[in-house]
Length: 156
Image 1: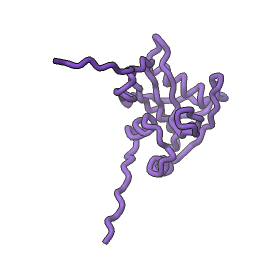
Image 2: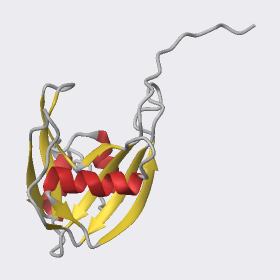
Image 3: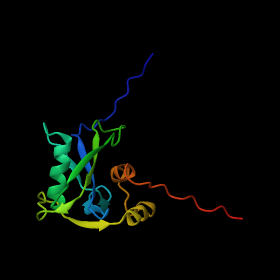
Image 4: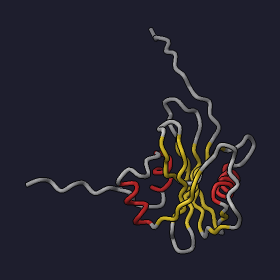
């Protein structure tokens, strides 16, 4: 016989995350307050895909709103399931290249964030030391950079 299990599933709209790079190869990240961890979080620009909106358009919109930047080239990095245990959505990942600021950010009400430019080495170090700790940001960045952390040397 089968037992009936009751579980909570969060019906959540899709999300879009953007790995943004400028012509010099620097990465554009955003630092914003996250209520779940009760701390600031360093992440890639990201947001909700509105009903009927193609994920790529959401990615372009979020990059512009959060950072005031547009990109010369876009490519898809696939998608991931944010937390298949409780979420029913996908997070679409994009690479935006040739990013440059075209206007001031246009933040949503209650949104308070700052933008930071980081080199690839700085991003790798920030992932390794836990400064960048959002799983979705790490997943997106890992589609562009090798983020493996070297294992410590064994003791003699």
